Length: 225
Ligand code: TIU
Image (cartoon, rainbow, N blue to C red; front, top):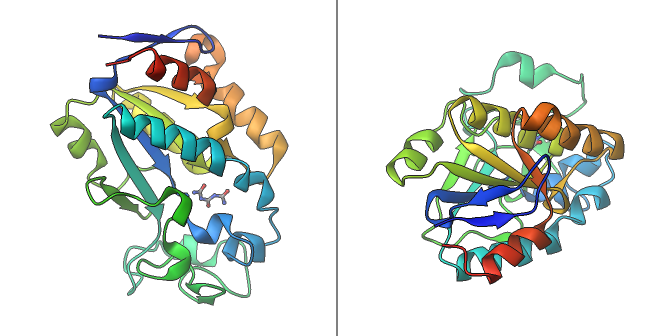
C-alpha cells in the first residue's frame, strides 16, 4: 500500500514496506563543535540544524516499523582503503588518518568517526561503513537493500551536495526512487544546500524528489504501510 507524500517535482508514493530511511554520515567529526569539519574552518551550525528534524523523523519511522540504515564515511585503521589522492587532497596540515580533535581523522573505531548520540543506531539497524562519498561504492548496501525488498529510499544526512547527492545519484542508477527531505539534509554552504536540492528535483525529478520531514511525518501519521 502506498501513501502520497507532497513533494517536488510531484507527489511521491511512499510504500513503507519497500522503503528504507538512509541516514548519511551524521558523524561527530562532521557535526560537533571541535571536530574535523570545524577544524577545516566550516560552520557546523549549518549541519546541526538537521539534528532535530532527523531525530523526529527517525522516531516516527521506527514507530511505523520502517527500515533504517545508517552510514559513516571513514577508513580502515591501516588506511589500506584510502585512495592516495584523498589522503593529500586539500594540502591540510592534518589529513585523514592523522591525529585529529576526536581521535584519528575519519578512521573507523575513533570517537569522531562515530554517529552523534542524538541519532545513534539501534542494534537491529545496519551501519554501512563507506570509504567514499557515495554509500554504494565499495559497500554491501545494494545487497542489503535487495535482500530486504527495498525499492525506495528516504535519504537524509550530510552533506547535501557531497555524500547525500552522490548517494542519491548512485541509488538512482541502481533503480531506487529517492525522496530527500530538505530540512533533514545540510551543507556547510547555504548556496550548495540550495543547488544540491535543486539538482535532484530538476528536469522532472532527474535524480529524485524533494520534500520536507513534515510531509513524511504526515504520511506516516496517516498510516503509511
Ligand atoms: N559526508 C560527507 O558529505 N563528506 C564530506 O566530505 N562532505 C563535505 O562536505 N566535505
